[in-house]
Image (cartoon, rainbow, N blue to C red):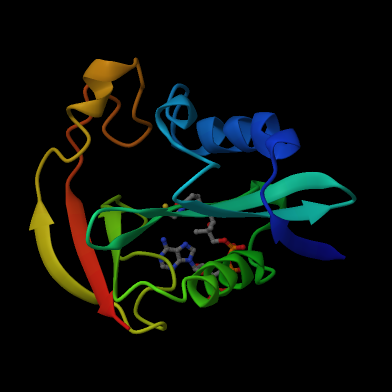
Length: 157
Ligand SMILES: CC(C)(COP(=O)(O)OP(=O)(O)OC[C@H]1O[C@@H](n2cnc3c(N)ncnc32)[C@H](O)[C@@H]1OP(=O)(O)O)[C@@H](O)C(=O)NCCC(=O)NCCS
């Protein structure tokens, strides 16, 4: 049985590996995965991390940042459970955003429409700058300075 739990420091190494496998090596190290202002959950199967999601408090909104499920555990509802848990945990936020990394196979953000998010705008080269801070090979555009486009989705609660 898969359990959804709050992410703890002991999970971070496995979470980083999961993120890097799915988004490109170096990406996890750019992210704040735990700590003040970050709400994060893991999906555990026999104590092993098989999924992760996070939300990060910004000045005037909360960003739903990462969501990832291990390839072997997909399409069993784990992603949806993580998404829902994270959203219901954000009690104080009035504006919630998703910066969706537009990819060939994922034109829309996972679960967003089902949970009432709507498209605000699309921006170019959203992740270009972070590629300068730390080497990160984008698995989508295959460039070190990522040139993927971003769709910003919003929900007011
Ligand atoms: C997106 C992801 C977290 C979904 O996890 P999951 O445990 O398989 O999700 P669920 O089982 O709850 O739901 C699966 C459904 O969501 C759909 N889905 C998966 N990714 C999607 C996306 N980005 N947009 C829309 N739908 C998506 C699947 O096609 C599937 O639909 P189906 O059951 O009708 O075939 C997982 O596919 C993943 O980790 N992908 C790689 C990382 C990623 O793209 N993260 C999202 C962007 S940050």
